Image (cartoon, rainbow, N blue to C red):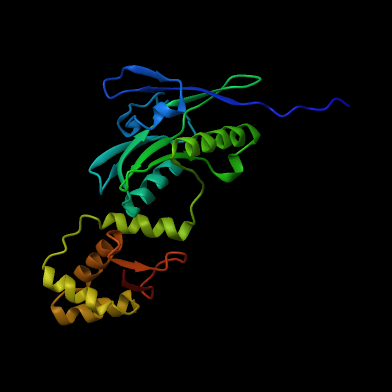
Length: 245
């Protein structure tokens, strides 16, 4: 039986569209770190057709006042989580094509390039684990290797835990809820210096003349802003304990 030689894969270059839609090519890894890919235009179009299983749209980032394209439910959930984490300063969808030389040419367009608040770059592919076949695994491994050479972070975002993401959806609904008096908010946060159930915190808030409805809205707004936190690994309800970060 002939011995199968390992596949040799070498980086061949990167293509991207600058903010003015000019197509540019970079051939060496050293050039990549100098480009602000978070301002790049999508290198491929978001295709929509009848009976398409996925769906696309624009996610309105609360913390960045920015709309970002997505083409699947999972991508929208990634953007929701990134928005809540509030670690990004800019996001580009389909930011570039990566090319490699191999037995057969390999090309890949990651889903997102994120510029983080500390200045790092983050390249993201969004794919549920069950849909990562051998071809995708090879591409992701090569993308990760390239990112390590450049000094970027890399992650493959898979299906999030249901209770966690459902909680984020609720928090986001209250992201624009009016907080009102700063002194009352400070007092409410003081009540939550030790873990306290949402129901108990709502009840205690009446001492500072916050109605039950207003108190709940404020609590969820503070959870969105991460000034309050909770165990998000289980379904959130009125008995869920929250506390100051």
